[in-house]
Length: 179
Image 1 (cartoon, one colour):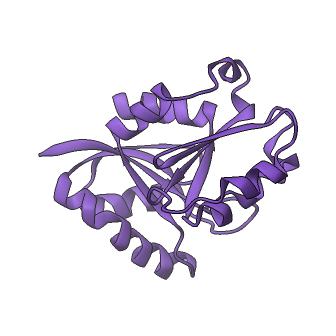
Image 2 (cartoon, one colour):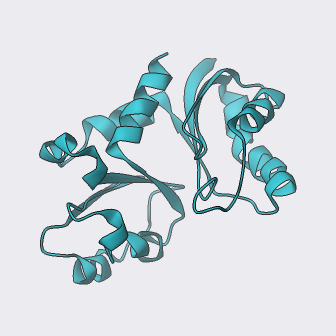
Image 3 (tube, rainbow, N blue to C red):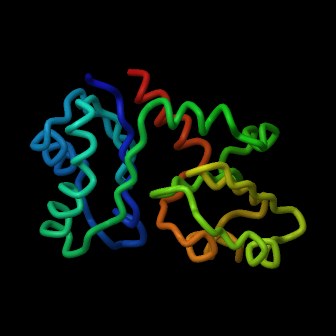
């Protein structure tokens, strides 16, 4: 059975590290059976079609291929279209959507087993809010993520690797996934 998937790579084309042309990413995805590939901006975002078996094998194959190309293996987060749709529908901060740069979703490799939300609460600014729902960590940081001490500690506190995208990017990925 073929489905639509969303690929998120961490630390690619960010801050001058992990330089990867999206055409190279497309070729690597095609090599492993993906089709109808659409990328968004230069930070490792893609939507594509693949069989369930192809999609299941992709993260390890991509890490290996990207390790050879980039010299490091970026975190590879793979979502089904339904996972992305659910994350969008479950947004607890609807009013923050008007300022899409202030709302960040961190997509996690797995649901945290023992998240330390108390440590994040201690770092939280008065105007910041966060919610963990399964494999998605929502952060509303009106002053910006670069100024949020909490944003830099998410993975450590949750004990799970992930990669973050702002609301604007999440909505664009939804458009790509819908074709």
